[in-house]
Length: 320
Image (cartoon, rainbow, N blue to C red):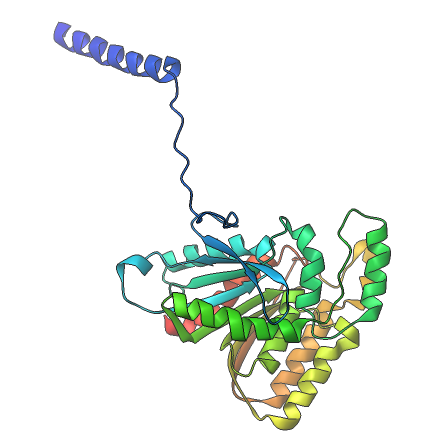
């Protein structure tokens, strides 16, 4: 017994000494490790590389962030690539959702490429994204935005209707550079977008000429320019009977409810998407597979994580 008591005393003495040292000893400063190369901007998300690109097509400046699969450095495999617009606010959600789902084997490992702007927060990105992600010029939107911005601290919109040029930048500049630098599978290109990004994703589905093979179209702004997306689809149907792609569409069921039940600018997100899905179902394009989900009790912003999760499972599910 005396031996045990002595042993306990010694152990507690050692523990106490360790605690004392951990509390009283000065803490050494941890070294700072630079992830990005000199001159590159900080990445949106740790574990990514980030660079500034000036497009020859649009003349505009973009911040491109790339996250590689966990096994990239230890294998010779090629990987599908998911391109995500609105990287200033949604890149982290896309990357971490994909990483978690890969742990369960729900989706394959991906290269994720975020397309954003070197302006800081999403608020500062509102102006440039309105240019790049909208397919036509909507002067009515520009006028309403100018009135709203006059009474706020948001940056003034720079215009709109730049999606054709932005799509060319992605197709002719960004994708070739990604596929030259990384082991990217050209057959596995996918595009994710929400809101204006969803509008751009649907535009790319119609006008991208096979640039992407999979799409996550979240809460698309189909109200844009008095529903011009429906006109674009009608024109596409006149000359195309096939649409080889796989797409997931979604919206939050609370998205038709604006402040004080007033939906701003006629943005009927839910009913517009229902109409579009009915049209696509009736077209019955050859090779086109699509699914949709209307998320209960979700708003335009809260629906984002659910859209990403459900969308990834659908567009990549057949590979698992």
